[in-house]
Image 1 (cartoon, rainbow, N blue to C red):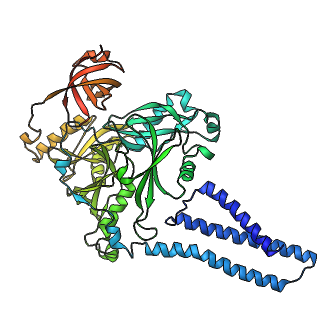
Image 2: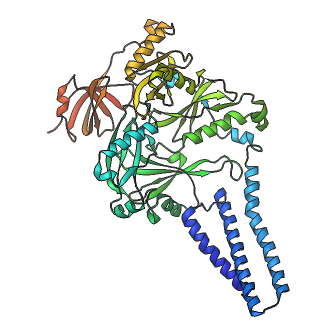
Length: 556
């Protein structure tokens, strides 16, 4: 076989193998991605191996035919492989040198300046409330258990689909919710149901430990459990071949329409270093349409652009590298890092990650806390000194040690001016059994209760007994409440048991939530979806949740 023929055949084999590999692996065609350079190394290796095999085959054939010209052929082979090694060395050198010049060793200051952190006042940003409704106390593990149980009651769905299991924390109409779409069980279920698509998703209320299955108006076609052209990642890659994708989270907008929020990454340091979110793709899995946004122009209903892991990583760079690389390794002067996990809190219209900050030489105490905006990447630091989260979790578990409950990762609230951890305790099956409050400054002050309100009352009583607060400090001075009026159309009704009392929650087409105890007004049971109401209400601590005073039909 002539050398030109071997080169052409080796090139054809390389193109075919490369096309198949691209279809399966989906690397970005971007010089700032390490996967791009690894793919080039792979393709050069395929070409060299293909040429080698074709050369060996040609030599074997020539031997049988009695051909000779070994010297010339050998010279050509040596020249070829010298060139091949040089070509293969180029992407390997880029990977090695690019990683080196992008490392923290050479860029400690640049890494420490990736974010800026604003110091804030805890009491101002987190005022005290009677009932915590802006913190999703339930973790994803418990949400998954409740979601699977909800789906299990729907025989026509559970036989063909399963819950994805990855729950996105969102702010839905001013209330924290966890959502997870359904997925096909396997390849054959996808074949059988491809025309129908994914019919719905599970929405979990992580405050009240309840879940609902919600049907889509239009089913999802593009998803991670689909195959070939319906695969979500493949559709995204073919639409954006040069983008370096980060997180891909399922969300719903305020109207209940499904979308995937896809973060696009770019390095801020060197060739590969300091990867951070630069753009956002909002992908419609029902139609396959998508739109690319700059980070600044991302719609406000979007919640998950950054991940808690990335937010913690960037703060760790900020906290450990500002005095140089060697200080982060040896001296550790003024070095601080985030704790090992994070929680969520809803402030305003956004989801924020919450985690404690401790010194590198961990002594089971925090020097403060940070919150990071999951949509904008903004950071705030609260200099609240006290026990770190795992010590507080251990203290809460110790209160009910005979039951063997496990504490979820806590969040931070304000109780009578005291920074306080709040968390739920779960049994061995992952079901929420009780609530716990632990004082940040003194984690020996622990109170538990079957409801949030019961735990809070017990906690305030402990604060009084310990002399932390005085009698008059236990409750804010009551202010006269102003009544307001509104016209609305009912879009959703829900009855929730709060502290043993049935409360009706009415969602209006104005995007607000109105609540009233059924014991106060049993006529609430007559309201139906679609009814037009004239309501009188008072504002609550949570902006979009309003206390209903009275109502009447506004139908003509």
